[in-house]
Amino acid sequence: MKSIVIYNSQTGFTKKYAEWIRDGAGCDCVSLKEAGKINFADYDAIVFGSWFMAEMLKKLDWFKKQMPEFIQAGKKLIVFAVGASPAESPMVSAAMNRLFTDDEKKHVKLFYCPGGLCYEKMNGFSRFMMKMFTKALASKKDASESDRKNAERLSKSYDGSDKKYIKPILAELK
Image (cartoon, rainbow, N blue to C red; front, side, top):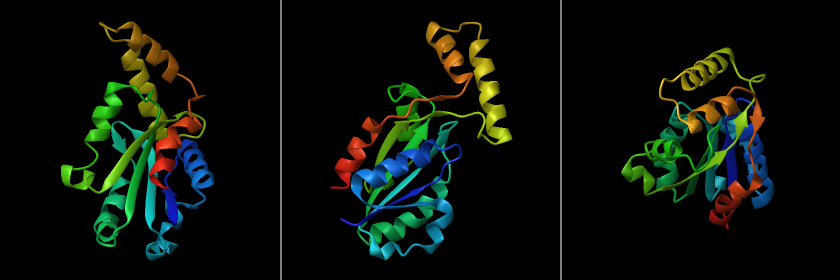
C-alpha cells in the first residue's frame, strides 16, 4: 500500500511523529505547506497529523475539505493528533470524539499521540494561551492534586513523545 503522511507542526512534536510513521511504514512524508504539490491519486492511504490545542486539531479544515474526494477514490484515511495532554486523559478522548461527525468517522481512523510543550518554539498567542491556562489551573479554588500536577507539568517545556503511540497507525498502514 503506497501511503503519504501530511503533517502540520508548530513546535516539532507532530513532525517527529510524522517522520517516525514515515520511517516505520516506508512511506512519503511532507509538511502541509507542500501538500498542494501532491498528486493524491498516487496513494492508497492518506495520513494527516497536526497539533491539538484547546480541543481543536489545527488545520483539520484542510483535511475535511479533501475528504469527499479521498473517500470517493477509496483512500484509507488516518488522522493523528499530537497534544500536551496524557493519552489516558478523559478530556482527550472526549475532544477527539468531537472532531468528526458520525458519518465522517465511518471513513477515517483517528489516533492521539502525546507530544509535549516547547515554549521556545511556540508563537506568541499559543504561549500566552498556555500560560493563562496553566495559571488558571493552578489557582482554582477547588484544585485537585491532579490539577496541581498538570499545572506544574504544563508550566515548562517537556517532551512526552514516544514511538509506542505510532504502533496502531503502522498496523493500519499494513
